[in-house]
Amino acid sequence: MALFDFASPANWVQSQRGFSVCSICHAWPAQAICTGCIERFAQPLVRCPVCALPGFASACPDCTKHPPAWDQALCAVAYGYPWDACLARLKFKGDSAFAGALAHVMQHAPGVENALDEAHAVLPMPLSPERLRERGFNQALVLARHLSRHKTISDALLRIRHTPTQASLPKAQRLLNLVGTMVVNPRHAAGLHQRRVVLIDDVMTTGSSLQTAALALRQVGVRHITAVVFARTDAPTLVDSDEPMGVGENARHVSHRLGSA
Image (cartoon, rainbow, N blue to C red; front, top):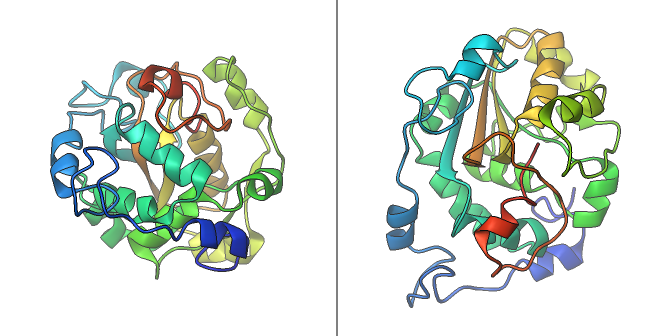
């Protein structure tokens, strides 16, 4: 993938607009997101250590009853204002300044630096070739390389089957539809055996996509998996979509349409 993880020169050129005001509070001069807004809107919450659902100091009832294929999940912020619009700027507009800002927030979330230090490899969630052509870059890969460029393996996970948007489907149906969509690249399978990995994504809603990736990693003997996402929805039943939305739209509309499964 050419030009700083963007698929084409056009995507890269589009991403190079500079910032002189904070995109949230409009303070000047500032980066894409100023320090004050990070401190205001990125305060850590008590979260389930397994799925990062807010409000649980220990494993939530669902994780206790049905543990996921990963070992722990960490996230930086609750999904909603102002982070939904910032993610939209990265995900659908290709604004690379937001990648660095969001990765900075992720890196300083509780537990993330330690997870990155202990990991042997950092793996971005893959996009299907169809989605990659449509978007021009993989936002999870861009975030992963900001977090740990030297540990990131861009093609360790492959999405071998494209799935349409599953916005109206419950979690169980999403999981069924995702079966067989992800595999570990045979080139990296032996190197991941008995290793610790960090799995990177932008948003977690139901966790279906992360579960599919984690199951593929377990099949090649990965020993420990930490899922690290930028944002987590407040409830695992919210729907997701890759349809682009206006950056200024209300969070209650956007939150149903941006996250990973």
